[in-house]
Image (cartoon, rainbow, N blue to C red; front, side, top):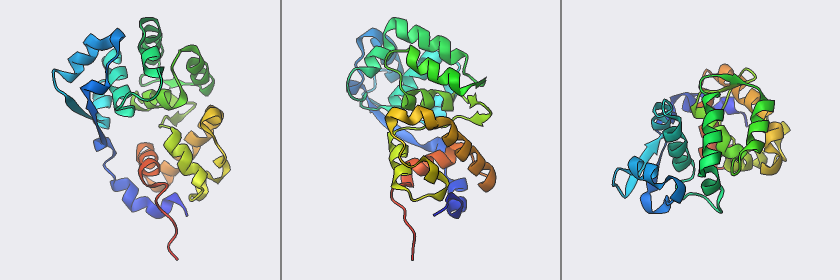
Length: 211
């Protein structure tokens, strides 16, 4: 199959409305609890969508917290979130992301920054770059996470056949090629790169050819 076969559906997809519900009792992080409580505003549950994250980027600290909540509503496994939000790591991350906002960076800089901050991985940093409207070597940044990697490896879309076999551990090596494919497709079908990424995330593993 080809992504272009789903053009009419993809270009109508309301990607900015994609939302996640987050429960306050799942988001206990001692180092940033006061700030987290301010986001919840005494509510036990909040809903964040992609538009909320875009609108929060004038305050990078708030943006980081909301993006992490949206991306990891149950706070994920292990202590990656806690490590990332420790004072020193958070300060370093804020400095990095201030340089990303509506700016162009290189793929080498992205890889270097991933290695420099404890708890930061490709899935997380590509969420940040995407919502900060970062361009990477001329390509608009979009999210690459484990679910999309699984979609690529299912092998149903011809455009991504050269990436088949990608793993999360080596995904940073292939991230620029992934961006090139997404951005070229967006021009071809006249869709936002965001819409193609979300199509892969939501529907990529559940579609097959009709005989």
